[in-house]
Image (cartoon, rainbow, N blue to C red; front, side, top):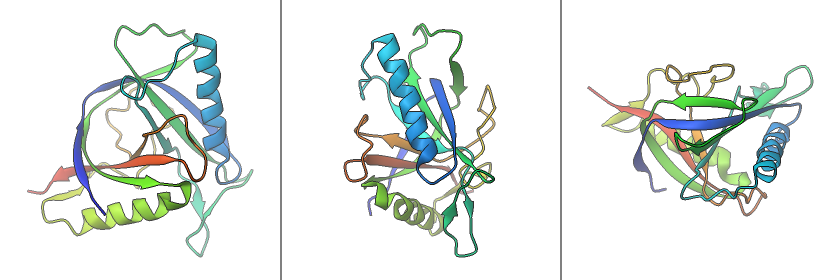
Length: 183
């Protein structure tokens, strides 16, 4: 596994969020919201100009076997950010956030079935690293929901490298875990 370090700049993003009652449900709903907005506005998402990040928000619950679960009683959320320039005009109904930058350890995965293993390997790499540790404000790679300004929160991010491909096999993500240099 190849891990690279990436410093993300401060970003202005449009945020889309959905809740789901089964694994995969909020991701699909959130992508549908993004696609509806793209059609409505009539733009194309250029991966070089409009990076698309996603993340669970909040995370699904886990059962006694350590498997992710979701239900009507225990839903989880998924949020997508589309990076936009400062002068990009957006309608008032959209959620705009200003996100602080930071240093991230990054690994690439291909195929939806490799996401969990990718996160596990990345966190293991950080845990065993002599120079970097997981950002101290990172609380399990979650919890941005309902914050207008997320500068005080830190989360893991999934860069959708080949957006709009979101199929099981074609999905290509770069997984970003926030890190800091050890003293």
